[in-house]
Image (cartoon, rainbow, N blue to C red; front, side, top):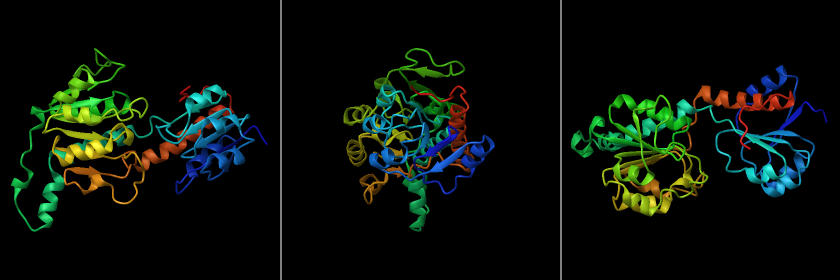
Length: 318
């Protein structure tokens, strides 16, 4: 096999035009597979040094049985399906595409925040019943009188902070990388602890990876929050313990929540949270725009091309 051949282990996108163009322009051959299991990967990509990946599971077993493999680049930010520690053990570099949907995800968080806090769905459902009564939305608070708490100040968390700043509310954040002072150019953010953020904020928006934050927001954390507070998650479903969130919303420990992500995607049937009138759900769509979709595909192909050309990798994680 040519050293200028790469594989895509699996991809559910409607078109591969962006990838094909990058590879064609770079004189690289792309071979497409639809692997779903460990066995599929081990069987299909024995001969490849560099692969793109979407969902197929790269476990320690897979890495141990692919001695030629040297690079996996994943479509997207999250790498939940790749055992990075095992990859490192077997000399495989792992990359993601962390900067393709920053504007989209932060904008989606803002849209969910406004839908929750302005009670848009409550009002719209009321109008569909033939009512004309603003009182169904009571209470709604002015943004300049609220505290917006941001958990995680990575690329998306910082962009979300930029978006909410013009609302003139107080902006606070918790991030272990910035325990005392906000990052440069973000002096309007007050840094605090997670516990203080949960107790203080009227709106809490989560912008952090799944590891090591699995079930970071569980029953004790939800109990800390104000009864009038709203919770938003556009990061990873497992960050919030969903049974605890369901209880918190049903018992009105908090005013409402909106999630673009769930712990199991797609859920089996109608998710219990979607039965609650103070919950808004969207189907992991925050990343999407026509432009971000194209950027994701192009940037994954460009990272693979950099490897083939012996150039430094841009998104190396290990």
